[in-house]
Length: 320
Length: 243
Image 1 (cartoon, chains in turn brown, red):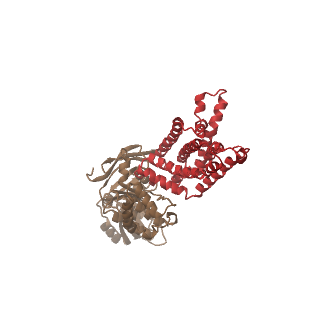
Image 2: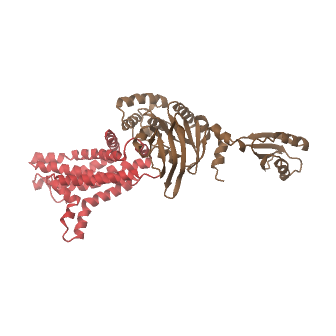
Image 3: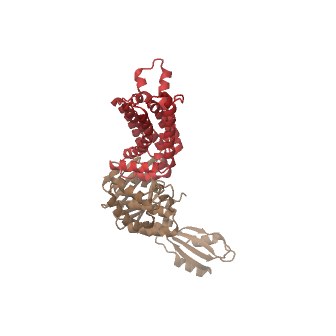
């Protein structure tokens, strides 16, 4: 257990009737880190976040936020958290400024304090020119920014963002990502997403959730390191005249260190793609070169595929 | 709790932001005016009766309140459930009880405005004669109390669903049931209804106010029913387990 953990989640279980949305999730979030909660839709990301923000209760398990037991001190822990829900539902009948004032007052700040915060935040999230607009008239991107401003209004220690970039256009996504990265300087951030490049760009650490369980937990480098023994080699080779797939598979698959060999589809091209799954620390490329020379094959491609984040994600969360 | 007032203020503003508040207030004013001038059955004439009385107003107004107030409360929780704003509201550092009480207070704000509008009738009676001022004050206190009770029932049904229409119909049924049906049911069930049961109906509890008697027991009765509805609403809000 890390000493500087701001959030400690232990054996968190959430049941909806007979459906177990969370089957005992445990992980820590450390001070000042940006944690990406990753997983396919329905994996339990939002459920975890909804419990952390005390929107819903847990069936069992414990959560400590900033040293406080979440279930015993729900009001105190809420003060330390800023939350942007997946839906980003705001009161559409309110003007942006009034809405932020309302949120600030609900958090017990004075009008003057809130004004100062709104002033600083409006620049930061880029809603200065929209402060007098009605929320109902705003585009999705601006609504998201108002939601962010609301989440940051009380300068919370922890910021929880549920799919902060969903539904935004590419430019808006870049802007929001930059903003999140900046947030990491003085807040602890948890964000959920199923967009992998987002994680690589913004997150210090990743927790992959799958079917209500933690499937992986670590920095991107750590996860990629763990999967290093899973690497693959793709060999593009021109078969000899009349040579069958089976013959190719026998030739290449028979090499030491090859765990599995698949011969790709026939294409119009005369090149056959053979994928070799290799066991750890085994490099068969020199052998392939020798084989090609001796059997007079032409190798046009030799490509190593290490498991990147996408690969890890698919590996861990594919249902097969 | 400061936050209760913050919520009440927002809800009151939101109520008057929608046409429903104006429709409800207009319906209330027009129907109570008809009852005031023509009697609750429509066969009394205010000017012919030559009586400086507000009885028709106090007899009839709870009926109208039972119908219009659920329309004012129907959106309070149901709409937030539907649009998802409830998620942000309940994750603010406020208790669920404060949220319900704040929303109820906002609705009471509307009730006060609606009741203030009907002050034209007493003003008219005062101009023409000398009505019993005690009955006037008592009647209004009674209307405020029974109205608040109806609002609390409406808030409760609003926590049951994310559909405003359903919340309205359930609220309407509950309010009308408590206002009239309890009375009739007791009379149906017993030839000689026990006094205790008769005393428990909204009608009998409200009757004293209309006569100008503000009895602490009647006040306590309506506040208790309100409290039960508030607690039931809070419990419903707490049990949020939807996905």
